[in-house]
Image 1 (cartoon, helix red, strand yellow):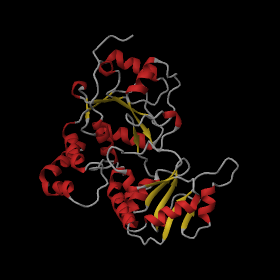
Image 2: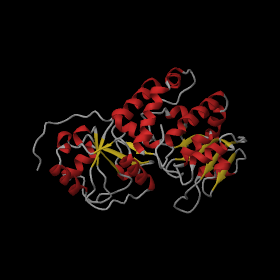
Image 3: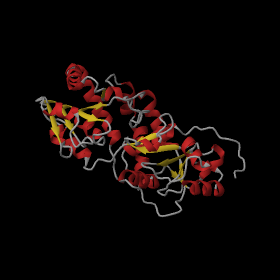
Image 4: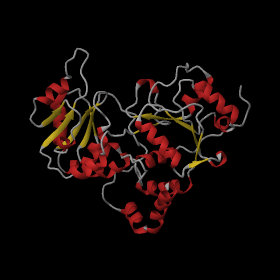
Length: 353
């Protein structure tokens, strides 16, 4: 069934040249880094990209639904191949702590690892899934050379390397696409919506929360993210490191422009090779307090806001997960980012210890 679906994807590109041409030549604002290359490259990926999946040595149990869905989708997709010589990349599935043994077994049984020292391999890592020191040769090569797919937002111990690694967009706890379709045209009567997740160490709420809560232009929730309330706001505020970042996906689709508040540079945003985040979201430092944040939002309301809102809604399809992957959805956009990383240096084959 999956082969039929993906065949339809390719058929869509071939038999609908007008739609495809419009996507490349439309003068409307675009959320893409390079629409002139993205769509042709996406078509090429669908027709030719192949991934070899190693068989796990033990029962595989990922610690998040997002990881499990990605793995299941990859196995059923036409990208998967049992012929390693045809593969562009190699996937290592594991949920065990003994990474050294896993890599050692792979390099003994197959020739693929030694050709690039793992540079054309990738794996999922959304937590500290190794008790082996990074000084171990096998783990060191994995961390340094292989593509790591980390859950967004990444944690400090995943050792995310921006130019090499990519992030796995979160799987919303509700049917995001259904919610978006129902609420995307809601009347926006508030400037901003903020859902606070945590407390400071002393049990008090952050300065940001206290200041937003008394401002009538903002809605502040201490309960789970409320899509209906968010849809009545122009901007959805996220305090990086405290807020539930998975709701950025829903915010984009609702037309609630995400505002990420952080005093440090964020390097782990999903799909940075595909979308222009600076055109669909705002990134604000909290150094000036709520007054400065509010000033920036008010100044952005208007034509700039309308453009950002529209581009964010266009880009939101790339962040949606489906049990059966759909064109341009989260799974396929992840595969596209892997496709971009398929060119690696192949070292001369040599015997490893």
